[in-house]
Length: 97
Image (cartoon, rainbow, N blue to C red):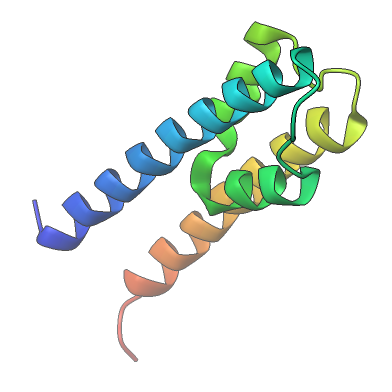
């Protein structure tokens, strides 16, 4: 396995762990009426490859499940990431002309 494959895996794992932790912390803050993490920052974290774990965590702890921005937006981010990865892979493995 090449070094950059390992780097991509480490990055994805770190982003997904961060997404889960931040989602749980925001849920705890909402219960205690404390300072919250902005929706913009949650979506940015999802777009930085934390969308899968964030979505699963939100469903598991019932956090922001009534917000269409999250329940539709995060799966859309995931689909865009998958399509982007497929596009990059196709471009990098395309035979030279």
